[in-house]
Image 1: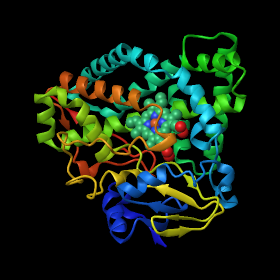
Image 2 (image 1 turned 30 degrees about the vertical axis):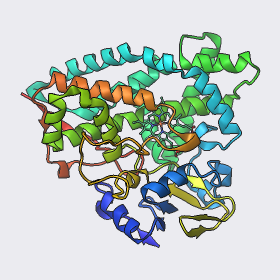
Image 3 (image 1 turned 60 degrees about the vertical axis):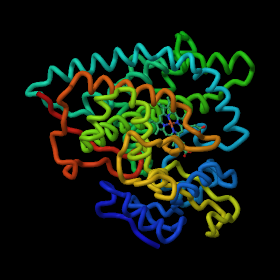
Length: 391
Ligand code: HEM
């Protein structure tokens, strides 16, 4: 069994490429201690993401795994068909394309306000993570769900612990606090519904008799809040970092802003915010890409980031090139659990990057890229801070 560590957090791609060169499936211990079966390579990752022989339900995790990791309610991401189908259908009726596109002016406004505040920073320097990457998606997802008075700092601290998921006393406390907070919120929305997604979810369930249980509503609110901002926030940071370290690409985008859609796809492929997918569990023994994996709750972990760097699928995969066709990347997953918020995320990142470049024509990095500290763990992937300057 190989062990991963060292510079892995900062630059995991060479390690994955080295493993992939030896085969697509590897039994490894992750830096945080969990033992998993990594799946590498574009075709293999895509297949594993949609493999219905693997379970997303935590009751299928091995007992050792269940005590090691905190579980948090019942959510789409932790359900198989038919429960997954039912939960996803309900949320899709509330999370409509109309609702997402109606957010466009608000996303623009929040972005403009944040960038104005950033421009007022002393000495033309700021940390982009604090100034834009985190507050934009946090504001958007809170407004979408109807969470006006969310204690954002507390929420961010809970979420930071919960995405990693290790079962420490702090994580358990964070989960309890967040669940209590969300339960209160659901209670408020039941009594006084607003024009928001959470109120719609409650109403939809009540209308057609397919009422979401309290656990399901809490799980839904939690997965939307966490999935809805941690990922998008880190994509803004990773994408801007890529642009600032590839001056030719930055110049190309400044010269032709219509490249923005392709640039966002390339950001997702090159340095998406989810290095790996969420856990899948074996039920019966399965063969994946020629390797037999025992049944009984072994963890299978598709390495999304390696799929984007597989030279068999993408030419010169280590180059950030906004003129390539990066579509087909699996940064939003694949199959029935494909990201529900992909169009919202794309809209936010497009708006953020475009407005950032317009507002700061001389924007540059204010640190050497190798000196940046990265968030620990594999989920989500992004720098802790991104110092930038302008004149
Ligand atoms: C750049 C931003 C984002 C990325 C890269 C991303 C990526 C992903 C990926 C890879 C999955 C599938 C995980 C798996 O199969 O293991 C997923 C699922 C999901 N995402 Fe996103 N996501 C992003 C933004 C969002 C936003 C903004 C929302 C909500 C507003 C959201 C909500 C969800 C939900 C609810 C699921 C579960 C879907 C299901 O299980 O059916 N995501 N996302």
